[in-house]
Amino acid sequence: MRMYDIIKKKRDGGELTTEEIGFFIRGVTDGSIPDYQISALCMAIWFRGMTVRETCDLTFAVRDSGERVDFSSIRGVRVDKHSTGGVGDKTSLVVAPIVASFGVKVAKMSGRGLGHTGGTVDKLEAIAGFRTTLSDEEFIRQVNEIGLTIVGQSKQFAPADKKLYALRDVTATVDSMPLIASSIMGKKLAADDDCIVLDVKTGSGSFMKTVEDSRALARLMVDIGKNAGKKMVALITNMDMPLGNAIGNALEVIEAVETLKGRGPADLTAVCLTLAGRMLSLAGMGAPEVCEERAKRAIEDGSALKKLMETVAAQGGDAECIADPARFPRAKYTRDVLSPHTGYIAHVDTEAYGLASLALGAGRNTAEDAIDYSAGIMLGKKTGDFVQQGEKIATMYADSPDLFAAAEARFLGATQFSEEKPEAEPLVYDIIE
Ligand code: URA
Image 1: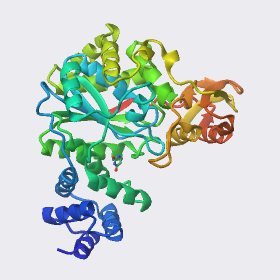
Image 2: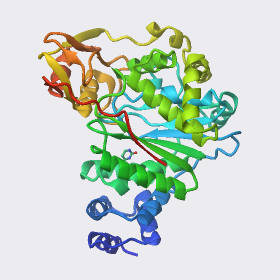
Image 3: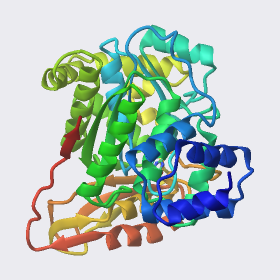
Image 4: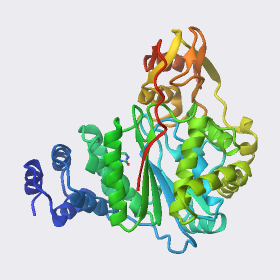
């Protein structure tokens, strides 16, 4: 088999066989296919697309390119949730303890943030002492004893995806439906869960900017998961504005804890309850509406918060900070952002908000960059709110006052004002089963 022929076949609109896709991914993994041929095939896929069968084959080849995790010694139903990435998306920190408080097992392997999106592992590392790397034995024991573990992906999961993603990132081929679906699902399927709830973000802060594209991606990923024998549901949720008010690691953990105490922002709480309801329902705990009510009660009676505290303590973190947020890292400097106009906030470029937070030190430009856990932005006003000129719309947090000017310019440049109140957008656009 020759890579040249595979590239040419896809370039001309052909359908690749399982063997050709397997040959490609084996060559990506062992380094025998040069970067220019990998990139050329990614571009041909970008233009020509793939059938569901080809995308499934690509996903399974990516999944099988590295280590798999054996969850067979975990007792009970294992359910996971995956977000396609957004700004202020701290849902895992709320949803995982809710679900685990019912005895459903959540063995979570999460990613780090890159670019404008945050990552659960970085957020958890804002808690002093929290260990995001555990041995396999520790990981399984904790899931069996407590029901919840959240770690980073320390294993050599789907190494083909690492290589492919790095090349897609620099060859303008990230935003291809089959490439995104196989990348996300290839990694997800390397872990051994029974049920997966996907949170497919849509809007200015996500990879998919339109609801139609998000729906198509969700459908594709649900089909791939079902082909692999998983129970699947996907939610299409709004990322046309940040979720909740906090952007930045410690700020987001504090907001997640407030949500578990029943005092969270309405949008974050609503999306978390829908996600938790769907996870519990897939795990066999009843109809989605019934499970959503149960999730609500787990917040009201404190059992979800208790589960988070147990998990933090078990992973060596300072569980006291859950009761007393003053123990979280605090930024040396703060600056209020004042509204330049009187009117409604009509629309925000959520990706740019994420990049403003990154410029304050909360994120990284390259995988090696260090993070300032205390940095970020706390939104005072969101889309649809009326503001007076000079009124505070956000507060920025940073380790140096020199970082404020550029972040503030980016933030204000991303905020559109209007005299008319914008129509409210749904928080959950659709649920794909
Ligand atoms: N997240 C991934 O893991 N892969 C993609 O291609 C896009 C988002």
